Amino acid sequence: MKSSSRQPRSLLFPAVILILLTAGGLWFLFTRNSPEQTPQTPSTSRENPAFSPSSAESSSPAPAAENDLKLETAGNTLEQSTPAPSPLSASKENIPVASDQIKNFYRHLDQQKYIQARHLNAPSQVYFTTLIQKLLDNPPVVIRETDDLLTILKNNTHFFKILGKDNILLLKEILNQEQDKIEDLLAGYFLLTTPPISSGQAVSLNIPEDSMFKYASFFLNTMGGRLYLTRRDSGTRMLISYYALLIAHQANLDGKNQDGLQLQPAVDLLTAEMETGGRHLRYQEAYLDKLYDLKEKYQ
Image (cartoon, rainbow, N blue to C red; front, side, top):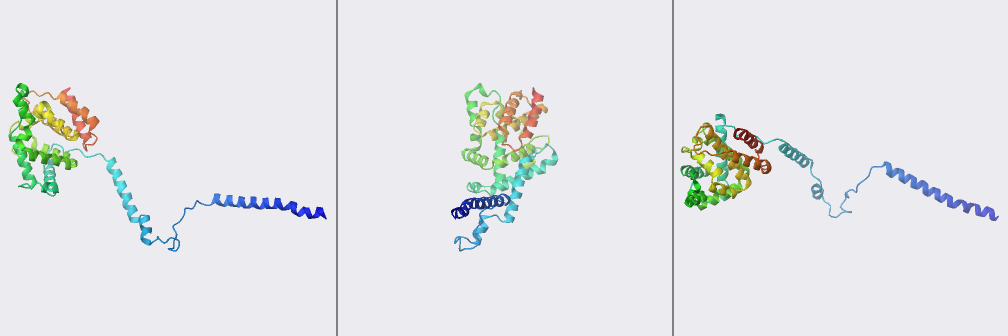
């Protein structure tokens, strides 16, 4: 009787173990073959009182917004991968293009609050054309600048003397506010004021003989010009030096470099600076291509 009563109890423990192992195996197989599930937002306000349709829309972007985001990202990628166009080439066909660029820039200035706050007595194009004409009519001294202290002092304050304090501050503010437009503006002005392509008529400027070359020599080869450039940001300094070199090079071609201005030191210096510090310029590659050509000519 005792042996028969112990037998069922002795089989109870293995049976329990078998059931647990079987249940564990089924749970493992089920979880292994089923995809991982993420918690879902409750669909009723009973379980989540803060839930509302508007909150659901804000938590996940709408299909249209997703498409706009994808298009914007693709556009940014395309913009980064596409090289910037070159500045306007020296051809008569580009004169209307350059003229329109300059007119559009001045229209843009007329709409800016910081320009309106100055209460200029004329539209921007008329006002700044008058300032440019004053500079062209009064070029700095570039020959034997260091012969006397007075000439050095005059060159150091050249722009202040011609334009006045208020206009100097205004031009500085434009350089700060419109940095993304300065490259196109300078390219346009260079094309419209440099012979033999143009003579300045498209921008209502009367350019005296050798005036442009004197300013090029001023920036490249005088204490006053160099001091002025050291006070500018690197981008403005490189752009002014670049176009000064182009003007001086054209004077060489025309046989008008009577001052004997040597371009090789300036070309080498600007090329090195443009290679290392010109990445923020839109047309860096075009500038460097031209500078490499000048290096070959003046080596």
